[in-house]
Length: 550
Image 1 (spheres, one colour):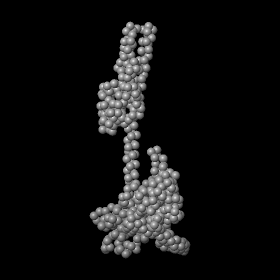
Image 2 (cartoon, helix red, strand yellow):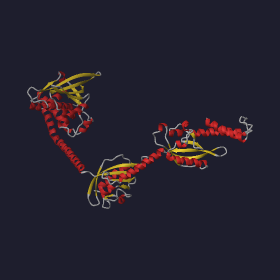
Image 3 (cartoon, helix red, strand yellow):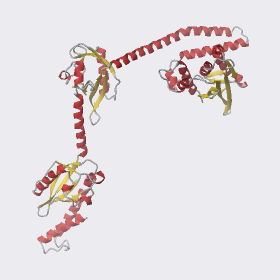
């Protein structure tokens, strides 16, 4: 407001000097000049408001180079408040390398010459003091009085600090890129690039040495078909299939795929040597994210890496062989399993007594469990918890009998007695669930306890079951089973216990794999948990599971 009032007084004062007889407070209808003064004040008021709210930095200086105008945007970008800027010499706010430029601009403005597109650097103040100088592209316009004399200059700027910083960084990166790309250092890998149209745009020094193809022979030619070919015209690939694989991989990356697994491909050096290498391809994008081509790194395997790749191929072949052997074994077991099933059905109808029927029922449970285990091929599914358990009615007593019979031979061999402790109601329990998985879990843990119990007279393994029946609604019941398999110290080896609960590794032992799969199966059951407790004189498996009670 002080600036506006000053402008108004200057305008009215100039009128009084020109016409002394004019009285400022004469009513407007007496003298039209006074009305024009008021109109000019309104215009000046509007101009000051527009300048102050402009989105670009604007400042002004008088003829002596002292700042007498400083808008809000100038204060924002420099950190220098309006009241601090007014009255400062322009030379105090600009960088030393811009001082002469500003001085010349001021001198030209006083002569009536205005500048356009000049670049100057303004210092940062206050909270922005530690920032880089502010880069401005400015236009100047002359400030004139009522008699058209130049009394100062107004600087209208555009802040290009961000653009300048980006351009400088880009220039540095481009320079670094060129130096790295063409460095003769053995640390720089062979590199080639393509445009979005498939033209070879780069073929560095390392790639020249690796292929025997000079840069000028490759650049600006179609990478696939003219540079990499299936004939001897340039860089000959191993075969046409390699060319097809390379085309598919580069097309996938150029269409926007973020990354590509390393591609093993072979080609011939110009002197006839065959080279096997790994290719990594990455998309190139511009500042807007548009794909502009593909950047490819070629890695020639070291002797160590070649050995690793060879081991990997052998391992993959061995895995494929193992899968085939397992499929063969499943197929070969299928016929004897059918014969056993037929004989069991025949025996069942041949008038057996109760004890013989019980033995037959146990053998049937064991046969079905064997068939289930042999059919297991998705170990990863068990590991990740994606295997669906079976659901059928079964007798708990018969399942427990099948478990004990499976470890009886080991028990006799190790001279370790098995003491079974079941509640009386077990003989009457008929449950609904996967009895074969329950048998597999209990037989594996029970046999592990027998195997790691000292073979001394008097040592035994306790196979104990506790149950708790709970009503669910009016008609449904479920039973919570707690199995405790207790054996003497020292118990299972520490390494085996770790393998049971830790993720699978390549060096996991056979016993560790069995127990690991077992504890994963327990987790698949309703309310299933498996723990291994270790005390000074005994150790124990504690297995919990819930089943609907029929």
